[in-house]
Amino acid sequence: MIRTFAFLYLVVIPFFVFAKYVESDRALKVAKQFYQKQYYRFNYEIKNISIKDVHSYFINNRLACYIIRINPNGFVITSADDNAFPIIGYSFNEDIIPQQLPESMKNYLDLASEQILKARELKKSYYNDIWLKIENEPLTKTTLSSNAISPFLNLYWDQGVPYNNYCPPSSHGPGGHCVTGCVATAMAMTMKYYNYPEHGKGEKTFIWSDIDTIDYENTYYRWSEMTSYANSQSGDAIAELMYHCGVAVNMNYGPDGSSSYTEWVPDAMKDYFRYHPSIRFKDRSKFTDYDWDILIRDQLNLKRPVIYSGSGTGGHAFVCDGYQDTCFYHFNWGWSGYANGYYYYNDLTPGSNDFSYGQGAVINIMPYFADYCNQDNILIDTTRTLEDGSGLSYYWNNTHCSWLIKPRGASQIKLNFTNFNTETNYDVLSIYDGETDQAPLIGSFSGNQLPSEILSTGNALFLTFNTNDTIQGQGWELYYTSIFVGIEPINLENQFQLFPNPVNNYLTITSKSNENYTIHIYNVLGEKVYSQTTKNDLLINTASLNNGLYLIEISQQYQKIRKKFIVKH
Image (spheres, rainbow, N blue to C red):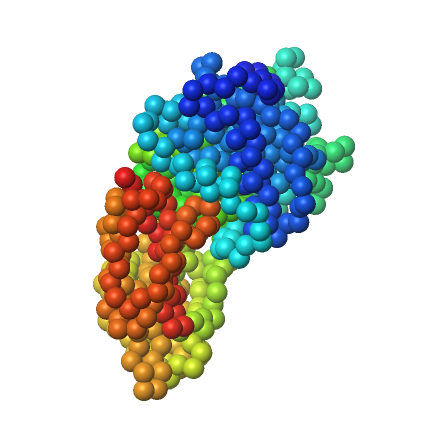
């Protein structure tokens, strides 16, 4: 939002050690171990890590975290108390200048720091095992699960010159203009990602020092001229786009800070830039951590950038365009690339919800005529869950999607619905008994009643989902199982139950099967913390696990399912 130097209480090591603070040597060791381990996990090669410098980040005159800069580029931000989660953020490629933090990032760090100070008051260290594991585990190549979407925005735009060349004049602003504002910069970067629209829609009158009317309808945006960094050839095209974004969200322009609200982005992108009507602003406080994680990852898995709204006053906005593991999002702060990296987004202190306060996200950012069916449409797994593609959001209007279910070696397919909600008679799922829509029609379904179980006569089912241009619904979800000759179908979703969730001391897994099954449990770092093979029900002691989110993987024969659960002591 505000493009000014953020002067912090920064002290280059060495520094004094206070009671309960993580000492400098330990912070460095944890940072180096974590950084190099992530290199290995995500297929980077590095032999040795050289520390450029270390800075202490204070809030209210109290040490909260360390900013550790890596040579030649990169950084790790660690908590300064082992009662809090150890890693706040990191980057393999980008530098960070502690004296010149992006305002959105400073806001993020301030809130994280408040969490760390609260953690210092706790009598028990919930994250001590993670600290110890990071600093003591040998650095070896690992085959641990590496769930990741690499950053896909590849833009390093900013708010000052030349990006603000079209903004209202100000003798005190950079280059004689007001700054663009972080909301406008975030919007512009997401639109450049799509190179859309060709031209806008309608017009809008904007009153600042003068009256200005933007003719969106007849403005053809010069996407081919825009580059990753603004230069003398591309600056004008980018500046025009940014100003039009600012006007669309009623930007309150200023020489050192221009403000708007992220909540206004969806209507602006739909009304003036022809973006898809399903675009929505979501308030994180209305979601559990688990559901929020699913919501954001659904977008990123489809390579859709998310405009993320930070906590605090002033409508801080930036772009989320990737993730690593279960809790690190990649943030592009809109600050010429400075401090872009992966940041821990959950509560740093067990039992606290403060960190999610004020956060939100704009989802479903895509062109109006984007390919809705952006997922696997030929399914060969023996058992699988399938849904209409909208995730936690409403499905889209004017869609024409299709899927072929043809599991390897199956003689028949059994299909069961778990959710169904569409516009009656107009948004219709049709199922055909074969490989195309020329096969016999088993049935066409709409409304809010679950269809009955469906059994194919052969080894394939073909599904189509067509919607009109009016009412939307939650959509549908189903699972299918394969029938092999002489073998009764088994659906793992029905075979296993996991409870309670959240769990305190004991997690129960019940099995209806008489066959052996294997479970693996992974923590937020992607590390395996538990494994067991059995054919009986399991009672797992979770007392030694830290509070937080875990992934459990259950496999049996050729099938595998994954579930998430929360440990909360």
